[in-house]
Image 1: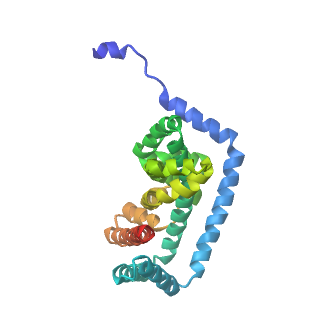
Image 2: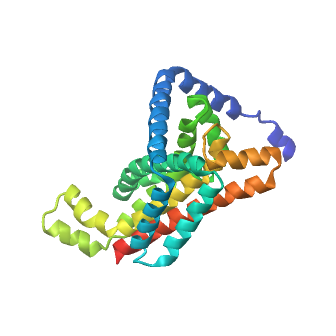
Image 3: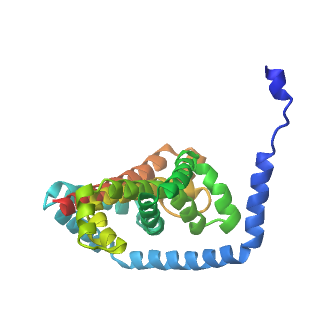
Length: 284
């Protein structure tokens, strides 16, 4: 049986993919250079704006936000304050701001692209059949693979890190938006139709408001996946806390690696709990 299979020549998939990426790079080089230049300048400006906020003021703002979104419970607020003080004490504040910039930009792009795609999937069964396998591919492909075309298109730096993060973080918001709209009670949709609502009116006044909690859950997952790409993106020059972890790994510095890794854990928990509490308060 194996000899029968050996009769078929090996298909040059690797060569086809490499040639395709080379073709895209060669023909859209001007576009990629422009996006890289604009993206780098914009993210450097965002990081500088974040750095202008005094650390103590930033910590107080985060604590207040955590306090109010958690229905005035002190636990999250205290944890956020202690965690951010730890990050500042370990001289990781600037790296955290670079990480926040990457997370914010990657999450915003994912949300802006993902919600319309989720709506399209909810409205069209054909679109769902086409997009669903693509999302499966994006979620199951190892994240390191996305670094290869990112470097080919944009070189090294923050922009290719965002590019890889968007591909990795996009599927949840698309899936949750699709799920949320499809789960809107049929009675509400029929009532909107009976009152003569247009498709846009039905979407914005009935379906999206009722799917808000599900979409927010997808947003939460997207932000956390973007955060999880920080260390991977550091391999292609994206600055931030991931760079510290990667450097510690390369030098075998366990202590430095755990210090930076714990900073990422603190940041992830604070962002996750604030988003979850915000979603709960909106639902309530």
